[in-house]
Amino acid sequence: GGQPLSIVAASGPYTTSADLNYSPLDDLLEYVRKESPDVLVLCGPFVDYQHRLLDPSKAGTPGGFSNGDPPDTLTLVRNVMRERIRQGLNQSTTCIIVPSLEDLHTRHTFPQPPFD
Image (cartoon, rainbow, N blue to C red; front, side):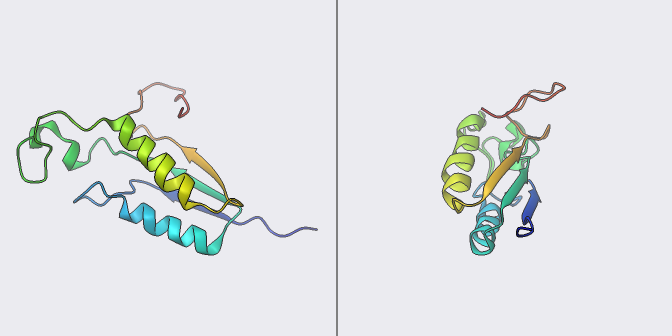
């Protein structure tokens, strides 16, 4: 037979509670680049709706967003998906993305719609 299938699986959130810099995701992607698994499974949340920096009650407070409006969450997700995940993978690794009901940009329906 062939070689065994290697899989790396991880579950979000992929940020620390102090920021939205996605450094834990970057560390994971560095590991994936080094190990070059066949498959990477990433389960959300990618933009956790409970993150303190996205809480409107924190508007105008240190670390909170200043105008009371959360950042465009779809833009955040696209940044995470395209710039970090796609560019952070070897071409030999297939990435499977599983959304979470805790993602800020998802609709709470069942079955859950796929990411675009």
